[in-house]
Length: 556
Image 1 (cartoon, one colour):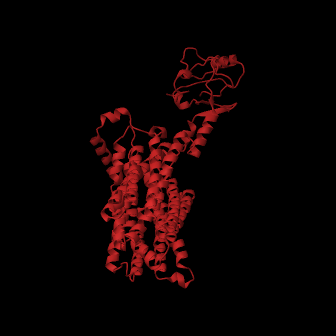
Image 2 (cartoon, one colour):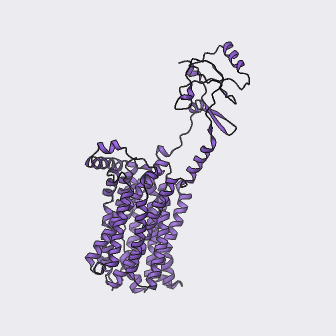
Image 3 (cartoon, rainbow, N blue to C red):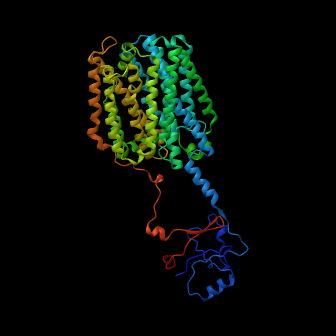
């Protein structure tokens, strides 16, 4: 057996002048190259004398002449590369990704600013009853149900050589047009059909933009082996929600001008549109199709292939079962948001600032929960997290019962304080419940299918939320809840509580552990791998790598 290879501090010593020089190969010391060098000796002649006396048979020996310098691989770039991986967003492409998607998710949360004004406009200026108000809110979410279509188009149809950022720009443009029209066109904010049309246009743009951003985050996480980036997206959205609801309540209290709030949000959307148009998708260092693939596949073929890949991905048990659970947990609970909103404003006479600040409190709690989950929650069983959050969500629904029954006054808590602290807590827990499933589905998304699968998840969640809203309208009508009669509203809240506990019956659909794909896993070394591993030594801040000869190789 040949002795273990040891590098000289300066050069390799000549062994055989008839072999090829491995340093001219594209890869330094390929796996199949057998490179033998002397022990750590200063005299090269001793190496040749040992070679003549030795009985060992060298397999395909190679030569490196004394006048050749060994290519030196500095360790510093390796350290820098590790630092850049840990820091995440210090590279140029990562900074642009942070600005584009970070501000985009911030604007998603800041949509509470115009929507708070729109709700007060419909309740006070248009005098809508609770059922009609909730119908407009839920009908406005219908474009989000078609998110899988936008995801398939984003995965299959390239616009200007890009397939994500153009869709972000289109979505932002549609939102700016809708909110600007509500601010500048008088009939748009007065006539109910026109109002509903512009609300649909706004949510259409928001859904297209969200699909593209979700796909960007999932694709960037796959390419850079950084799972769990959805947590940071929720953080940015929470910060936007905090500021949006805070400023929304403040402006409504001071000015009572809803149209000026629509116009201000349209101006922010114009800035976001400028930002997306200036960003090049190539600068994000994302994998993209080659020009040959783009030429070979027609648009119908690409769409058909993406649809087929999406169906295959959805049928996987690791995706279908948790998706079924989270959708059913939302679908079964009827939402009484319109009735509660009208009760708080008409019966309790709460100021707009209180309603806005209650949502600010909820977004602060959501941001805190997201930070805790990103730091500690990923090590906890996903099934345990889902079960605890579902029980917590059902419990927070009873807080509305305390406010409706005025139990808070009996224990000395004013309505304003109680609404400020607890009114938006159930909605916050419902939003946080979705985060672990977004992280799970994003990590399981097949390459090239990120946009389709994430949009299908968002569409399913939006459909379940819209359906639960219509169920709430039906429940309110069945119980006789209207703007002048809230007698049976406590019964509706109790029904919500028991239905929220029902999904715990099939909690086994949620996996215990998170199945992280192989691209995110660090491959461990087995005994054979450790025996055959590359070894090296560091000399004077430089790294030299070589391969040990094995007895099994010599017997071949």
